[in-house]
Amino acid sequence: MASRRTSCNVQLLPDTFDIRPRAVPVYLQCGVCGFTFNTGDHIISLHGIFKSKTVQTQDLGGFPKTRYSELGGYMSLQRGWIAYPRDTSSEYATVHADCLRLFTRTCRSDDGIHRLWIAACWRRPWFEADPLNLSPGMDIIAAMHRAADVCEMPQLRSMPNEISQMIWNQTPTISLWRYSSVLQLAAALSETNQIGQILAYLGDVFSWQRGSAPVIERCSAKPIVRLTIDAQGLRKIERLSEMPKVGKFRSENMVYIVRPIPDLAGVLVTFRVTRPWKARGSYEVNPQLYMGYTNAASPPTMPPIYTHYLFIDSFRIHRYNAIHGHTSEEPSALPTWKRLMHIQQQDAIWVHLPFSKEDYITAFGIRLKMFDGRGTMGMPSFLVRMSKSGDISLGPYHKDSTQDFLISAEDRPTLVHDVLELGSLSTFGAYPHTKEKTQIHPRQPCGRPFHKQACFSSAPLQGVSKAEIFYEKDTGMSKGILLEYDNGGRRALGQCRLGVAGIQVTGKPGQLCLTDYSDIHQTAISFTAADSQQHRHEKLGWRCYEMKGTLESWTFGSTTTFKVIMDDSSTVHH
Image: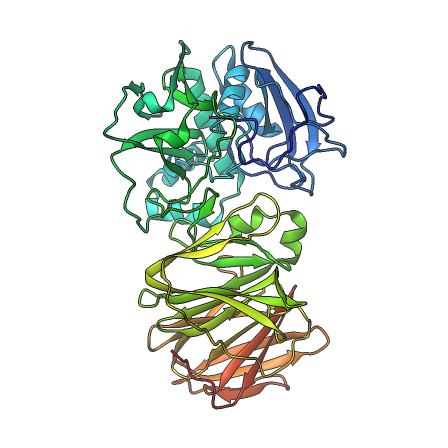
């Protein structure tokens, strides 16, 4: 399914113009292995024509730091991109140079490069589709078996699957996974037998799944269509009798389009008759059609935007640029951080909202700073009321005139927000919610921030059952603290970089100790267990506190400070 104007932000020139692009379009993920390019990776452009088996290659050198231009999911390797590729009979793909070399050495087909170019282009479910940047489907067990053969370590074949999964979670960017993905694709394309293609309107497709033939049959009893898309492109087409009941499941590796058939009028699907079968779509009738994605197979009815349902790790550099949900499949936010622009990676602040199984959101909203009596989305902060952890503010602190936009949530709601290839997030919400008016009153800081845009966080020190300190492995400086409470609540302070920073855990802490390094605006922290018989510091300057009062933190850039406040407002309020 493709259109001249899908959700891409590129403006098309009038049809009377015939202007060629001044630069080769470069995609953010390799068409062979499926992994995201890193700055400096040696990349190659593949340009082919669908009606010909000729594929042109162009060496583009190293992947640049500026990963995005003003042109949606594309970027120009040189300034002056002035037009969008208009000829739908040809298309570009971008690949790692080493992935291409490995593929050509291992693919047994005489037209392997042409097959590779098709497979790379069909990772986009339709021509001009916005990049989805989905994680590649990885056969971890097969990758470990290949590692056993290459390294001549047969014992790797008997490694438990759980340990293999842990290795993947901790090292998702090592070459082993990329090369295994390339070998898997080369083997599949070597066995593919191209016969022809079938074209059918989406409304006439009853069902289809990658690797099998489509079932072409009109069915008015099932007026809803659900498309499943993964890193390889269109994966599944299915018909439903009604809109699915909203569920909590969300996918890390797939997105979905769930729409009534009339909304998809004019969508033509091309099935490439191969073994295995593959499919791709195109808009033949309705060029104005807007396709909205969601990572929930049973999403709520929302505006047609690419929405994620995630809880919650956000990155901020003056604005919120990404949100990551910590799950068993993606326990660390590092993959999401790697998808940011280079300059965003350097200045990003990690803001963390922890959840326990017993805790859930009862109210949610954003607080805007007011300028000339009007709010601005430039520097919002999140306001959250938790059933166990109380009222919490995430992001920058606004001490002057502000305006809150709040909703009361119900039934353990799901966060809904838009996802943009460019710019910051701009749409937030929760589902389900009620129209009941509410107010959220997070703690106000006692001290002043060291920077006007610093992020504020706080947590009471009473009733703490466990404390985790996140520290820089190189310097030992404390960057974040995660506190768990006897009532099942949790609070995070500073930057809790799960899966990245070093962690020091203390159960049932009885004392908190900290020392400041004023020349670099940093604080070192330690906790001592309540039943510990030893408590001393080799160096001077440490201040020790009982677990009472409130711990406050300010964070901006690479600087994080902590301070203990002794007052009467340090308990969790509900």
